[in-house]
Amino acid sequence: MFTVRRIQENPVLSPRAEHAWESVATFNPSVIKTDGRYAMYYRAIAHPDALSPSPIGQSSIGRATSIDGIHWEDREQVLLPEETWDAYGCEDPRATIFEGTTYLTYTALGGYPYSKDNIRVGIAIARDGKNFTERHLVTPFNAKAFVIFPERVNGKVAALLTVHTDDPPAEIALVLADTIEEFWSTDFWASWYEHWKDFALNLKRDAQDHVEVGATPVRTADGWLFFYSYIINYFGGGPRVFCTEAAMLDLHDPRILHGRTYPLLVPEENYEHYGLVPDIVFPTSAIIEGRVLRLYYGAADTTCAAADIHFDHLLRALNPSRASRTFARAPESPIISPRGTGFEHNATFNAGAIDQNGSVHILYRAMDEQNTSTFGYARSDDGIHIIERLEKPVYVPRADFESKRGSPTGNSGCEDPRITVIDDRLYVTYTAYDGVHNPRGAISSIALQDFLDRKFDTWTEPLLITPDAVDDKDIGLLSDKVDGEYVLYHRIDRHVCADMLPDLSFKKRVSRCITVLGPRPGMWDEEKVGIAGPPMKMTDGNWLLIYHGVSHKNYYRLGAAMLDPKGLTVIARTVDPIFQSSEQYEVEGIVPNVVFACGSVVRDDTIFLYYGGADRVLGVATASLSTVIDALS
View (spheres, rainbow, N blue to C red):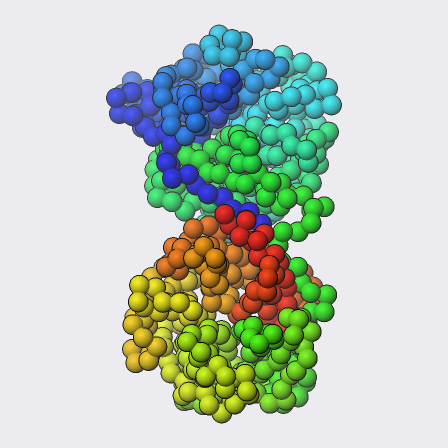
């Protein structure tokens, strides 16, 4: 469980009109640090040359310096096209200090029109660490993105490169040499290329996807940390999505993969959406500063940007042997299963919960043989073991808008309860569905003491609180007022929305969608998101939101986000899921591969998360609250 935080100063480097050589774009930065000062090498693009056959401006390599890695100065052009094999441009530098010498590898454009026959790898050498007085053609075949490891691997000089980038499918492959001079030896490459597939890394999840080398690997105690570009649907099957991922490679044989992340960075900000080539984030450098790893990347092929990752959190996510920082299901799960008769004939799942008078009170969704949903009640003293479970439902459909109108065995009723206690009154928000009209949000309430005394005949009449013409679900009410108003969460289409309510009379339905949280293209929550339970207030006034996210393959997973004191702005959000299906009762059921939560309670430092497994049973998972907060801090 970890987060990626773009720095507020982004983009950290942008084109300058007064510098002709970098007046169009400055991107794909490679950063090294020596003697306490940073040097950034980046691709710079000028306006097109009227005498050049290429309609694209010439690419060269620029350099800027910094004392903090964020604010850059002393920008200068350090590598221009000079050789026949790079005469049409020098692109995308990767800098490495290896055995006291600075090496700058780059994509060399040797002709126009650009093609697999004239795009290769070049290398420039600065033996004094600054002046590049020597350069060589590296690969005699089509390749890009060549990174040199900063130290030897088992006595060998090591590098990673992308082979056949312009004649895909491309692969990322490992190169090992006795001396660095072999990297510009045609005899060396003739021998290596004959067996290059033996050196390829297995990083693709689907055949239609594409990978490309990103940043120079960083040595850690667990292995070589390697950031790379992963392009979903490169060969079709859907929209292309440029992602950044991380992998942990074996220290002694980097072809061996020990762990990898989900996409951890995708285009979300304006400077990533708009530019020469829209919707691109491309990782090109990583620097470790204490407990923080700073990832530098190109944004929309126009600017340089940076994001920070808690280094230890990332390492833990990449190491399957370390204790999990995510939620762990209780061995007793599922804690409630359908009895096969009566109101819970088919399913018992998706529960809201509150902790009162030493007991966790659970309100769960049940489905009978006709797939009518009602709410059942159960109680646990320790949050896991059920010590009381009523034989009859405690909340049933009462209004026309939740009574069955469609197929006699079609879904209908009261679905997915979420509980909020305000001023000694318990409010239950839920999805009301009649089997014909759009699912809509509804609410009812009961005096808290009546609820605890099992006086379930005192529920107020249910009211619709979302519009008729909109599919609006995942309803939740914040427990505290914000600026004198109540915050109601709901999901429209793919987003978590909010609306502000002056009171709790609900005489007026929801009329606004203040977007709070949305799906992230290419990531595990790319299709839609919705709240799990109502956000939980933290001691600092912020709100912890657990939410569900759906992938394009209809897998339901859970993530976490920290909201500001008003409950409307995301401060931090986990990159990876905090919980996902793995047990048979979560993978197989009425709807497979689903974990879906509607409520949580906190006792001391433990969060008890109640979730539905595959829309059939109810489970519970626990995690350390301080660990979750730490991941989001």
